[in-house]
Amino acid sequence: FNGGPYDGTGGGGVCKIRPKRLSVNAPVKIQEADKNVHGNIYDVSLNGLYVTVSENLQDGIFVRLEFCLPGQERPLEATGRIAWANTGDNRPKLSYPKGYGIELTNFENDDEDLLAEYLDRNLPASVVLH
Image 1 (cartoon, rainbow, N blue to C red):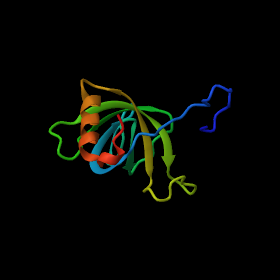
Image 2 (cartoon, one colour):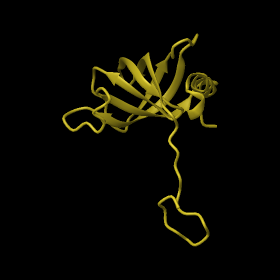
Image 3 (cartoon, rainbow, N blue to C red):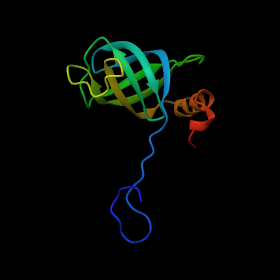
């Protein structure tokens, strides 16, 4: 039983498994409506990035991202949504540097496959999820 409502059929609720995150240090360009913000990726998964930037970003807005992970030949391009902020006095993740969680919502070309391959190559075998 995983905490969801029990319906007597032997299962219950929805089990959500969070994709494993890989710590990286890679540059990222974040394009808001009328400006480019440069920062660094702190960690990455198939679903998102955690980034550190010197400027404030607005929760919920969609941004274009361009980033090149270590060892890759060309940048990946994606669209994402600023999902949460880890800034200010009441930071939810004190172990992380100040920054933002960005949910990846769309990729250009085959960039989602390239990200998946990168994670498969670089995550320890015991945590790779297929």
